[in-house]
Length: 491
Image (cartoon, rainbow, N blue to C red):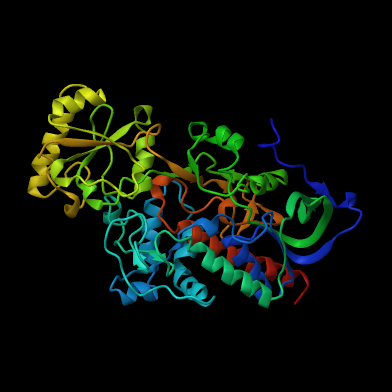
């Protein structure tokens, strides 16, 4: 097995001649999760050192638009007339997960409103406004919108829908995540957190079964940190082609891998080196959004045999995940001339227009008659205002009977898919790394993309969960690590 997928061998403390630093908490990585862990541990009284491989803080967070998935009755939800509760948020997140971590989801939902206030306490404010449309992200600085499948069947029948995508006050095409990272850097400085950039952690250090530090290198300089707790916040593995090929071979050559060069799985592999378990390593957030404009969702999405297989008004990653389940990962979005608009950024290419459905079937190599039948069934019920097969929302129902007909190609090898990994180290609701038998690895935590999160596949993901849970569980890990140290010291 190549070094790109092998865990780096842990170092015994007995083999360390000297230590460069001696701290309570060592955090590996300064993105959203690592930054929240660091400032929370420091605020709880721990001495904290952060080692960051890049020349500046941010990680993948600095590239993201800035949506946090929050709910339970936040001030933005209340101000915009969108009531919510922790229980309904919990019901929804459990419903969309095929393998829910109930403890994590419960903690996340019950702590969401408090976490909202903590985030704003860093020095910014979510706009108290609501965007009602269907989009990847709010087009302006609107503070709230639906960013998941809350209004999509069958989930709308299992939990009362509420919008939970809280967006930072920036334009849609701006990396809003950098705002929070910069505020975390400032808070870390105020709390006395030491940060060393351009510093790569290479191995964990152990004393028996307990993690007691980590070794690092920086421009030829080598050192080892002694720490009472180590928090891995080193990102996912989307930029490690060997690891992606090992766990998700279909996606090893993804055109747009959403991450930095340091999302190479090193943190996950270090956790494995000391007995940590992993979960959902074969799961990915993957998408090639066919909207906006949302009018396109009045059409139908079919596979190569002309069969519908998903509610077209689904969140874009859910649609993409269902496309991956189809033969040859092939699918098409079909709309008629009355509902055709070309996206401003067409990640899903428009193939052509055809005057006859039979010509469309022939061009796409769909078995004769299948597409015509699918359209006839859909159009008949859409005219009556319902969709008995997939229960699409009425506002996205419209007969597609005005030729010519257009086809957009959602196939994996044709659309421009982008994605990031969702699997990682198995952790408790306080971020402790767990073994296969669910016992914790003493002294070790993992948060952010280095840990397996509450959204384990694209079918259940919502925009904002990555930043939302990364910041939330980063805080919990930092506080738990600091409190564990205090308990050991008898404070």
